[in-house]
Length: 281
Image (tube, rainbow, N blue to C red; front, top):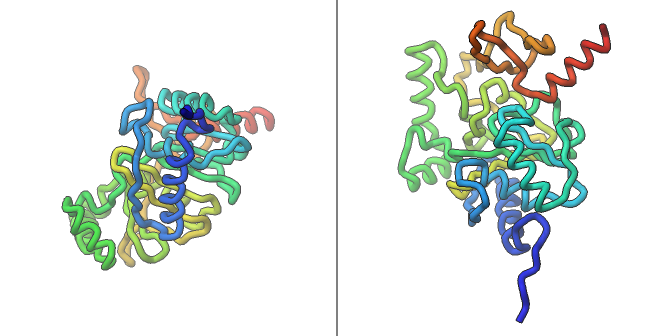
């Protein structure tokens, strides 16, 4: 009688192979949603199990890991996921974006430009972009197959005609490689342009919904918009990060007793910029 051997990365090899196959299919069909057998994890579904499973299936002993939650390396979600991955793999961990080969993220794309040697894994709560306009899953598949996104266009038109712009503040629909329209996960509009022609491999995992999809390196990604309308990202006006002074980044709005304060969402970028400013002074 044989006993099960504890394998690298929590999962057994068959489980990792199945997730890798789904990921490879997603890479071959940019923006296409691929089902996979989502496993039970030692964290609750909805807390990043999809991204965690993708990360554990592809990470190797040579990799260096970074985990962020809304740009922050020190949040509860980021710390717990990072500690779990390190505990079952023993890989090196870092908070420096350029040093990481695998970056797992929730709700942000790092400010620091990524490279072709890096993989960005997104934690995704709702993978299907058509859910907001079509609840029937069979019809969703038909619409994707026929590239019929008329209901999304109607939603954007109604918002634009009434409010001057779309009210979708995150999860803004994007067209991948001039074909599938997909949900980019709840990243802000500010991060949408970073998806286009990005040299890194971007993988999206939804554990609760049991879905994986991908944007391969150097792939065309465009926000769904009308030709006579500019895609408008968040504008912070004359606000800057009160810690490092940065103005060309996505800022978090923090409400305190003495008023509203703004800080960099990306903690690594903030730390780096702060050190550079202090060195220059």
